[in-house]
Each structure stands twice: as structure tokens, then as C-alpha cells.
Image 1 (cartoon, rainbow, N blue to C red):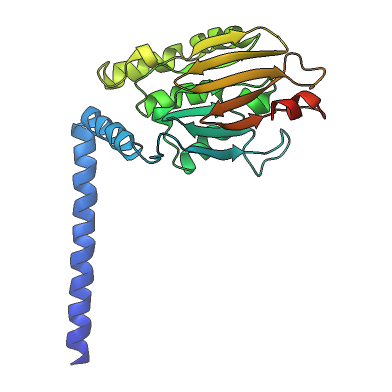
Image 2 (cartoon, one colour; image 1 turned 90 degrees about the horizontal axis):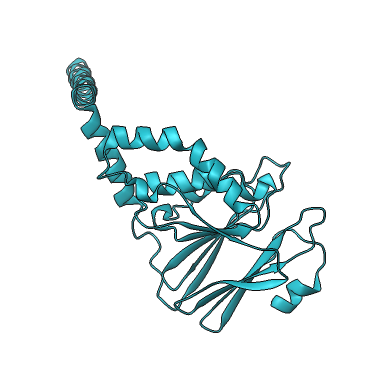
Length: 248
């Protein structure tokens, strides 16, 4: 009786193993014969999966700290803060590791509306090219405005050259219907080094940039975000500064 049971178990294991091998062979065959369709399927799958993960009400505000690490630490992503309000998704700073961390948090990068940079230390903006590219690859089909003090346009002009081949190959590989180059690059919104200025004022959302003390880094700014009688203040890197308290 025991031998009969063992024989049945062995047959079941062999059958399961055979089915597994067949599934692997079938998958490899599909990928080999239809590589473009398969890659397109994967892109569409990731786009669909990334849709509507954060459905906040229009009058709600939500803030997520993506990265809070120092430039010399490897345990946490560098500076990055996500703000959701009035059906908009804004990022403030995109330091090293922010893109990967944001994806791990399931943030809807394809719905990204704007990026705001406080200053040009690597731990605050080194992931900027990757965030622009990654949000596009994940299905962003709207303009991505990037805001920052003097120096931003030069960075984004360099980014255009840096991503030139990547963007070309994406379109060649997946087609212009899926990868619209109109949205492949960020749009620079550079502002001068003034003490305080409104840089975004739309649909009830007002964002003000203000100078902070991060000497010898000049310019360096913080941001005040106002909506629905609520306010968020992101100082960026600064010494004790009365302007930050005033803005808050």
C-alpha cells in the first residue's frame, strides 16, 4: 500500500515538473517569436498597474517623505518629498535613490505634474534626469514642468543631450504611439535669486520660493505650498533662518 502511494506521489511530481518545463518553454517561445509585442505588453502592464494608486479627494493634501538621507549615507535615499493636492502630484528635490524609492512606495510617477529643486547639491537633484525619463517610460503623457533657481536651464539643456539616445531608442523600440517624445523632457521654469517670489499660482494652489542660508551655495531656496487654507513649508538645506519661520 505504501509503495503504491509513493508511486502516485512520484508520478504527480513528474507531471508537475513536466508542466513547469512546458510553461517555461512556451514563455520563451512567445518572447523569442514576438519580442516587440511582449515588451509592449510589459510596458502597458506597468502603466496600468501604476494608475490610480493614490486617489485623494480634491480638497485633501498628502505629504510623503521619499528620502531624508545625508549625501554621505547609503541607508536611505537622499532628499525627496512628494506632495499631493488638488489632484496634482509635485516632487520637491530628487536626490540619489529617490526614483527607486518612489517606485518602491508605489507612487504614481506617470501622473507627475511638477518637480521643484531647492539647490544644486547632488543629494537634492542628481536623480532629476532619471525621474524625468522614468515618469515618461511609465506612461506620463502630460508636460512635466521643472522649477528651480538660476542654473536650472543649463542642467536641463545638458539633460537633453544626455537622454538623446535613450529617447530615440525607446521610440524605435516601442513606437511613437506608446512613447510620445513630446513629453520625454522636462520644461525648465528657472527663476532669479529674489528674496521671495510666487513661482506657481494655478487652480487655487500657490507655491512661493524664498531664499535660505546655505552658504556658500547660492542660490538656495525653500518652498511654501498653499492650498485650501493650509500650508506646507519645505526649507531645503539651511542654517537657522527667520525667513523659514516667517513663511511657516
